[in-house]
Image 1 (cartoon, rainbow, N blue to C red):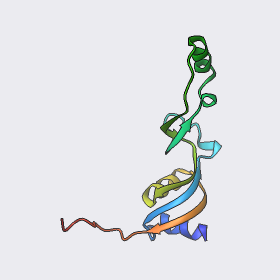
Image 2: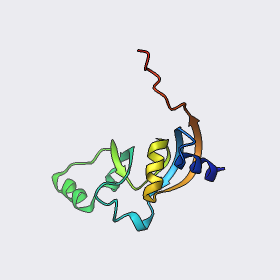
Image 3: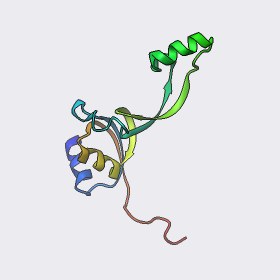
Image 4: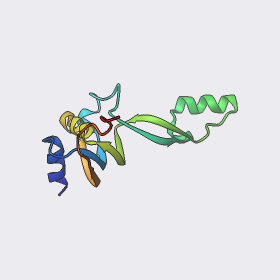
Length: 114
């Protein structure tokens, strides 16, 4: 079950990567306000930018093109995260709301012989 998977991650019994849905609860948004803990690539559109910048662009006769950015966020869906990051997020009180996939690895130095 998802609960057993997350317990295995937090107790260091599972090492690897999980595809998950993750979100910061409302009670922690102030704590993470300066630097949200989830980094993801997303497309930012005109309607996503603030009202002030929208007005500025209109005054300048410019348009904001759809652009891909790496952003810090309070949520993500179907994001691939390594288990140490998931353990840290859970320890901070962030919610893992769904586990989609699990990829387990052996926690060892794979390129040690090189």
